[in-house]
Image (cartoon, rainbow, N blue to C red):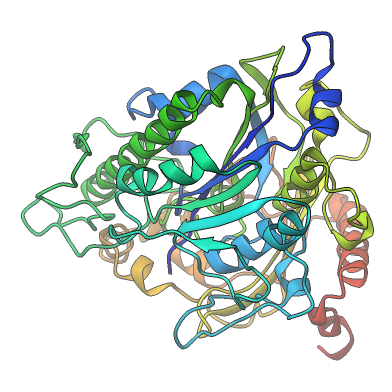
Length: 476
C-alpha cells in the first residue's frame, strides 16, 4: 500500500526578542501543521543534494530551518509508520502491526493515547485531511475531518480546503496527508518503458503546474539498476514530488497571509523511502533513513545541518513538549524529545542509536525484522529468515523489478536477486565503510563480539517495548 511523507508545522505567537527560543516554546502554545506525503526518500529533494528535482518550497523550509542528515522511520510501511509518528510507540507496542485498510485490517490497541487526542485535551483544535490509514478512529481521533475531493493527489486543492481552518483556529493541529509520491494511477502505456504513473495524469490537476522530467536526467540511487525502466519510473516519481511541493507552497502562502509563518515551527518528514525494490518495506538504509526538516520560530541558526540521530518515536514527545502539554508521562513514550537539538543543531549525546521494527506490510507480507542502527554499525535480525522475502504487489509489478527479473545478471544494485529474496538471520553492516549494506559481517570472527553486543541490545529493546516477537528467541 501507500506510504507517506510527513511535514509538521508549529506556529507560536509573537513574543519579546529578549526571550530565548526555548522560553518562547514553553510559555506559548504553537499551532501545529503536520504534512504527510507518501513514499518520499532523501533522494528526491533539492535540499538533500539532488540538482535535478524541483522542490523550491520544501527547500525553502530547509533554508529557514534545520535539516537532519540522520533521521529514521522505525518501519518502512505506511500504516505502521504513521501509528509510530502519532503515538510515540513502536508499532509492535501500539498494535498497528501492518496496514489498516481492507483485508489487512490491523488496528492499534484501544488503550493508546495518541498525539491528536493529547493535543485536543491540551486545548488544541485538531483536524485532518487526506490519507488517514490508521485505526481505530477512537484512538487517532481528530475534531474535524476536512473534505478532500482530489483523492489525496492534488495537494494545492487540499491546501485550499485548509485555508479557513488555518485562519480561524488557534491553537490548532492540522494533519495534512497527501498520497504523493506513492505509486498508483496505472501505467503510462504511451511512454517508453510504460512506467507506473505515480499518480500523474495526462490531463494534469487543476492549479498544478506539471514538472515533466527527462528519464535521461534523473539520478538513479546506487541500490537500483541504472536502466531505462528504472529511469522512466524515477521521472514519474519526481513529477509527483514536484506536485506535492506546490501544495506545500500553498500552505506556506496561507500561513503568511494569516500573519503566522514567522511564528511557525515546520517539521517536514517522510514515513518511509521511495516505492522501489530495496527501499519501501525494507529496513535497509534507503527504506528508513529519510528527510527531516525543521524550521523553528525565532530560529537563530537557519540553514543548519544536524547529524543527531532522530527516530520517528521522537516526534510525538517533541511536539507535546513544544505545545506545553506537560501532563503527559514521558515514560508513556518510547522516543524522546529532541527540543534541545532544535535549539542547538550541534547538540549531541554519548549514545547515538535508533531501533527499527517491521513485521507486516500487507497481511500476506509477514517478515518480522528488528534493527539496531548505531553511528557506525547496523544489525538487522530477520526472524523469519527461512521464508522468501515477500513483495508488495505494486513493487513486484513495477517496471523496475520486472526489468531486473528479465536481465541476464538479475541484480538489484550490488545485491543479487537471490540474496535479496533469501536473507540470513543476522545482517551486520559497517554503514560508514559499506553504505550500500552489501558486505555482511555477521559471520566474520573479528566481529563476533560486536554482533553479540548488538544482539543483547536488541533483546533489551524488545523487553523494554513489550515486543511479542521476543518469544522467537525462546521457541525457535
